[in-house]
Amino acid sequence: MILKHIALASFAILSLSACQSTSQAQPSAIVNVPFTAPLPSDFRSEIAIARYSELLNRADLAPDQQAKLFYDRGVLFDSLGMSTLARIDFNRAVQLKPDLAEVYNFLGIHHTLMQQYEKAYEFFDSALELNEQHEYAYLNRGIALYYGDRPNLAAADLKEFLTRSPSDPYRVLWLYLAQANADPVQALATLKANAQGLDDSQWAYGLISLFIGDMSERAFLDSISEGVATEQEYAQRLCEAYFYLAKMYQAKGLDYQAADFFRLALATNVHEFVEYKYARLELELMAGENAS
Image (cartoon, rainbow, N blue to C red; front, side, top):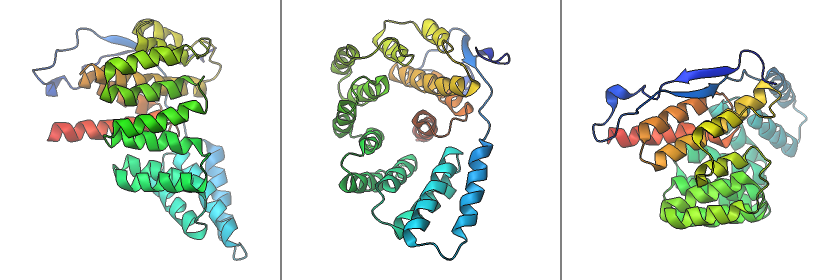
């Protein structure tokens, strides 16, 4: 059961109406969306960071041990949204131990978020050279290629990622997003075909139903709280739901509504989720387009 203060909040997708382009239709109504308080920082992560910092001050650590501590601390910084500190630690780790595939994967993500795509590709390539079975490097390189306007290469990586777990709705959806950039009609057909292999009892299957058109937005929003036991899980679902709703509105050319959903994804504070990370990038890209 969701705790008491989690409730439906009236959210008007009208926040940028003063900047609304006259060529885009105005939103016709206020949409009620589920909402919750932003996740607080995890005090256990903060304590762990302090412990790693104390260990790193020791003079008797071998380079491999230092590299592992920098990596572990960097992951915690990343989970708390401290991206600069995380990136500093990842760079330190790879300097001490250049064969840590997971560090290259994280550095690739960070450079994607900075829109330094060529550098990001290099890091993901390094991760896969060190460990060809590092499946999340395929996901993250695919996402980097997607944002780097290379949809065909992105689809190839995301298809490889899907083959590692064909029953994962999120993998199916990311492949669709990449393919839709090149051929929306064929992408939808592939999405429907891939949906046949999914477990429709999973909550995330609702995302697929939403994009296919088998579920209304209202029904999807109402389903978010089903089976949720904690506020953390609820916030995580909301982060995902807001991001993919934003992508759906974006595909329809409704950029102002999409931007508001991206902002809602950021309001959850679920820093470690890809949906949170790329919601910020999406907003930066949209701001750049408006400026030009």
